Image 1: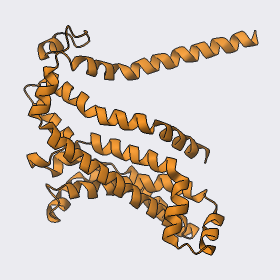
Image 2 (image 1 turned 90 degrees about the vertical axis):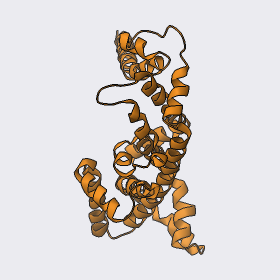
Image 3 (image 1 turned 180 degrees about the vertical axis):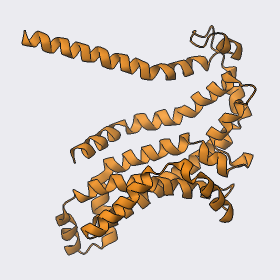
Image 4 (image 1 turned 135 degrees about the horizontal axis):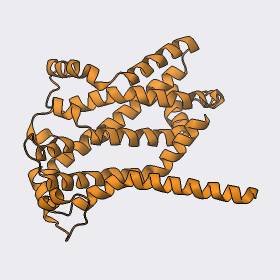
Amino acid sequence: MEKEGMNKTVVLKSILWLCLGIIFILPVFLIIMNAFKPNNDILTSFISFPKSLYLENFSEAMRIMNFWTVFRNTLFVTVCTVIVASAVSFMSAYGISHLPQKTGDKLYTLFVVGQIIPFHAVMIAISMLSTKLGLTNTHLGLIIFYSGFYTSFGVMTYVGFLKSVPRELEEVAAIDGAGPFRTMVQIILPLVKSTTVTIGILFFLWTWNDLLLPSIMISDVNLRTITVNLYMFKSSTNAQWNLLIAGLVVSMIPIIIIYIVGQKHITSGLTAGAVK
């Protein structure tokens, strides 16, 4: 009887997770399905299957939104942001973890507070600051502000891991003649590989998908990112849903690839963080 009860529980849990999986994957499936339909078919029935593969949506959407230019812009900003934000987060967290406890806790709390402040609360100040510093219509401005926003999360994540690393490893490295920077890069950084990959992938997703900051700072057509140019298919009076959805599908491909490649590291990183 006990085994039968356990089997029923397992079956019910499996059914529940299956239903939840379908609910989460359904919007993505509908987006991909409608990317192959003309605009009239989308307006007529959004949930119906396409009668034929209407590939003109993709070529037209990529042409209108100047896809390869905005793709290069987005990739450049995203990769630079991931590198800068991850490096600053790790070095800041490494320094905080080696400070006296009271001082380190105060700095750590400061970064946590920075994490909970919403972007909309500082949006106007950022716009004025970027104008004053000459960072408007520059990719450098996006990279600097993105890195500043993400560093609080990166420090908050890294500090917990770095505090669990035995100090004996650094003492042995110092005895062997390694300086603080070499110890940090060659000894400590490889120990937090899963955390670094997880943070890097999250930074990549956040930057690639962001619309608000580029729409505030970038007005030059040749410097826009993918999300800003996608919005050109939607106006207050009309929407080219077939082109918008096709552009969304194309822009999703790098994100899906990055997530699939780093899925193992994300899982191990989050699991390790939960244990620690």
